[in-house]
Length: 537
Image (cartoon, rainbow, N blue to C red; front, side, top):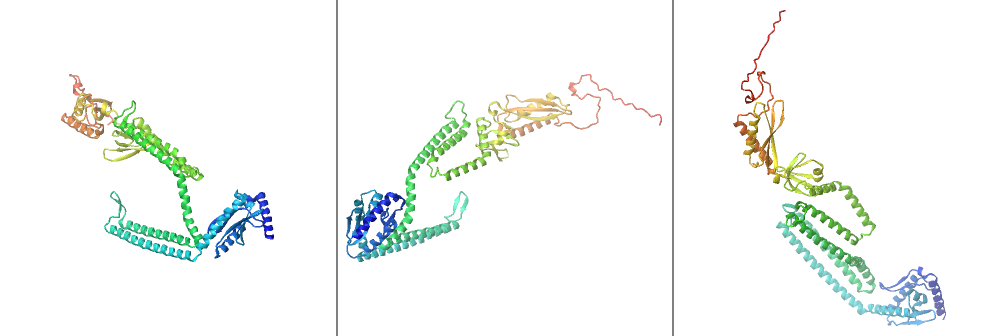
């Protein structure tokens, strides 16, 4: 009777503690054979939830070792509900326990009793001789299965190593990129053999891990170890798998946005390819703008796509991700100044139509034909077949000559200079130069070549022959042929091609003019020499 009184008083104390601040006491699980049966959330008298849980587990261990069948009964009293087996009291369910669980006390006691009975019946069954015999039989079968797996794994490794050795002997393991050998056959064979060994070792350890977990689960005494081993592996995998499942909607959005971006980019490429080929025309849009405009449009589409999918990336809102984004942005802004300047210059050069691919241009000391133009740089090939890469910022910031801009429509004026003495009639020089230009291939007959006298110098006259051509990319050969014909024409006419600048003894009384320009009765004045004698000598 005194025990009933103590239980009653304990129930009142527990109820008082529950109403005073039971939420501050941590719950304690009742563990039996590695399994959590339920949790104790309220103290009972001077006993904390942890002490109550430990005491209940110890009583269950004693009852599970008995040979007699377990029969669990619930005895309700005024303040507690006792759960017992025969004369042994397992636990008391108080009003504080019911309040913490959010249930009626008697109903909570019935639930606890049913769970305890199922657990004790199973524990007694698992401790029987027949159950232990079955456990050892299962352990033997699992061990045999492990041995067969390891034997098969060893055979598979041997077969794989033999296949690798055969391919190495045949020289078929080398990794090549076009004509360059990136990884030799010996090195690749060594890497594959090592990878095979590591893979086999990993599979063997994984099989042993699961074998131990399975064997431990066959015996009640080691079942907690099995739960620990399985939990150590499966809990991280479950966390990762759950995170992946939770992230699947975001993956769907990212895939959809990227798919739309690819389709839109292909459509834009199709449109600008048609504009570049001339099959599609817009007023005011030149075909040479197509490639650059497409690159700009593609860049805008990619940036817009990145902005849309950024919030759906894993960890996009975390401070670490934002810090890395700011750091990368700072690196790009500090290190891409010249690149941005070249890109802007490339866009300006494209839309101002400064040149086109195939034009003959000259920038500083570099002259050649444009063979490639990108947003960053322009590639020029000289007449000596040398490629020169010129940054677009250099092209935009320097004086550039385009020989081909209007050559096909209006023609390019080629000019060359010769200096002839004053004693040769200028009309004859004009005729000879024009005839030499007319003899030159790729020189247009219309408009006809013409000569300009650019200066009357101290010792000679400067003559410039001007001739039109549409072959702007063949200037070197045209100039060479023109100079050859000038020499032939002047030599055939007996005219010396030189710039007189020399001293000679001559009669200075005669006028230095062509003979046909002198009057018919012109006679050079006589040269008179006066000698004066010194009478003092």
